[in-house]
Image 1 (spheres, helix red, strand yellow):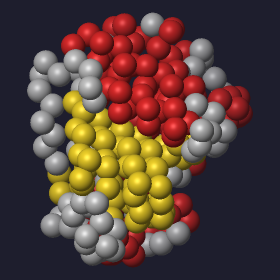
Image 2: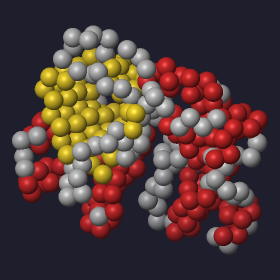
Image 3: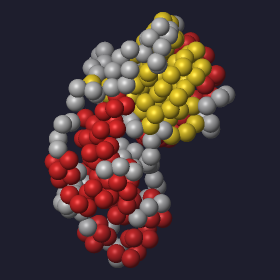
Length: 290
């Protein structure tokens, strides 16, 4: 769609991350998304922050972490406003590094999973991380790698933070690391096959449980019913297609695993508070502001 651009970031194959320091930045770029994680620090700023379908005003220091392919934009109604912006981007393949599978990196992996919901950090975390991020802009080589992982760890253990997006999208319902092999097996299957027909009976048989036992087991592990979880995955994927493509609502419906338009519209409105068409229109209006 014209109002939402896919950004090609300058990260090279040999880069662990990139950091861009703009002391005199203007928020004059369009709404966009990219396949990398992003940490965005705004110093002495004021305006609106748009992450997915969440719109909030900010003032002063703003610090947000966003997962891959989450649409975002910072805007201001003042064309003359100058702000200090530091952006860190790193590839999603970072989580494939074997060292990050070690127990000591568990908080960082969880942070990256949570980033698909958009994370905004509060005081005093912002003050601590602002200093670390500004220090990173002056480092090179191995020292920069240590500082980078130090920032991720500080974010991961920060208590004062909140999510910007509901926990009801394909990415947002990514597997949370669990000691239960069976629940990980089930969730992994759902995420890979949600566009196909998936029944409660079939999933219960997969893990050798009765339907009743499986229903209780799944809700205990995920805090939602099997059907709700499956619908959350599908609605999240549908939302992504609505703001990233020009597919018709009907095409989005079937591409997301639903086989009935009326049912798709009903569930979408219950989950998102608007019909698919209204949701697309609202996103378009948001991304083309100013």
